[in-house]
Image (cartoon, rainbow, N blue to C red; front, side, top):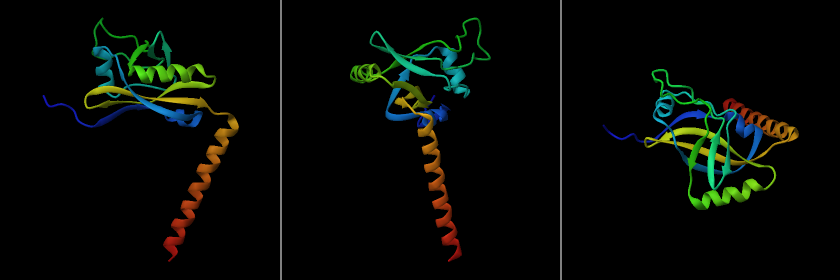
Length: 157
């Protein structure tokens, strides 16, 4: 069987960019069981309530929902179990230092297969206040209006 190539996105956390200021991103591997991999290949997962934390020098992914595999047997997995993430030691030590600072958290942005391996994109993020969210929406709306005006001006020529 030929190896997979490229990147296949399984799930994205679109709300994360609205709720948090993203400072840095990391790509991590995930320790999964067989039925979890099969459920992911079927395109089923939810990152909405997920987060990651560092315990005893290891990074753990918590509250990510990977539903039970439909064709699984008694050996099926628990949908919201904690999953170990695979990062380099220097990345883990950097994350330990940053997450000890107040206001920083690790948020999953997307879950995908890269060359056949399950990966997750983690963001080191700070929570936004309500006024920051409004400001971001206003900026996006202003940019959209400017692009519309420029497109209309081009059409009229």
